[in-house]
Image (cartoon, rainbow, N blue to C red; front, side, top):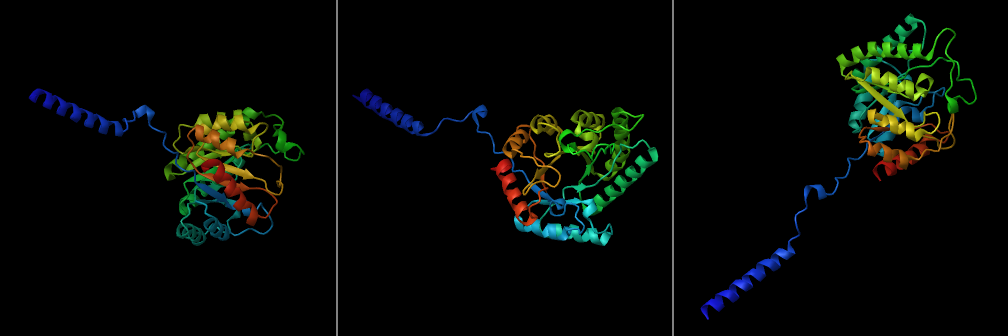
Length: 314
């Protein structure tokens, strides 16, 4: 009887433990862990979105105010839109952004290395070095760079569809590629000292050909200051395979929208598709809005931000 008592007791104990254990979910193995949600993409707005090179400059101070009100994370400053290069003015912009909780991720500047005249190229190198100094003063970590163009194609009505340019007599596109590499090398020396990234963009001209753009980038990629800015609207032909080919190198994306029709051309870009490509390749940098439509920026910029947020973070 004693043995049977203990046998029944042990059996009940075993059943009780087993029942409790059944309520505890099995451990999740490491390879079965759900993928972590990717960090949200942050959005800047280019001051260009409010200006478009009109006769009267739209104040950068007001862009900062708008960006804060709309919920952007930063403001990209177009150098040509600045009222001054005086330190007091730049300090004002920096303080306005800081007080509003906004970053200043990029300074967009213009230059061209596609010039046979070495002295002319040297002037653009000097201009870039000066702008690196401005970026340091403003606390901006990145500068948008151009390759430049031959200047022989922009008057053609289909230029923004074909991107075609003819080299100047006696020269070739390879000459221009070499000038770009040489000019960028000089600028990168200074950028490395100052801790500023020089992000070359597909900005028409020579860089309309992404074979050329990639060739220039790859020749300079070992510099810690070398970067790449991808503009979603500046591709000749199908943008999606070209965007995917380059996104793995990109530090920042400029996202074009064209509400009200484009000032120069119109594109119907699938931002869900572009965002999916960017996420697939691990892009985590800023997406900077360049609203280039004819609709008032007061309505088009908020619509653009909603579009980009849904695509990249929705």
